[in-house]
Length: 257
Image (cartoon, rainbow, N blue to C red; front, side, top):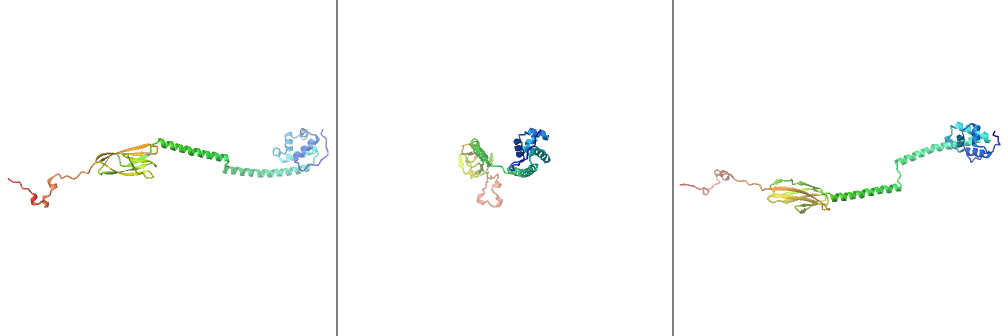
């Protein structure tokens, strides 16, 4: 049977749990003995001694635990109760402040990602790899592909009556255009236009585009140049008109016996 001891002063700088635990240990009483005496679970008493109030039952039961504990170890219940109320008030205020700060931090981190040196280096490396990869792809593609060439004029197998014809079209930048082996002017946008003189009959025009990698594109146009037919009189009436008075007497020859 537990004996009763004289009440001692409590160190105000200690918590309720620390005060009760120290008093119990000074008296040589085990936590199991108090648990059996008060009919309270030993785990609840451990939480009380370690100030883990969030793991204890509602406040009214905790105050009952403290009262019974104080009676066994001869502590002032009134002082322990006042100290407990102070601790709970401080704990409640901290609990109210903590969620707000946590929510604010989460909101900021969700809207504004934190750029660490490691992340910046990773992003920069990805950009460099992309740029170098694109440049290599462009060079390989340009080296292996033929230049673009579009001849808008003339059409193939075209028949004309003039001795000259305009050859025009579109190509890429920095591409050389040759017509039948002769270089012609190409503007910075790739547009070209050149007048070519034709010979009578059939003319073959070879329009060639050559890029800096010596890749070539070729368009061939077959142009037929024929002279315009002149008007040829088919009868004497069409050649001279006697009734018009254009013929003179010396121009008329009489044939007789």
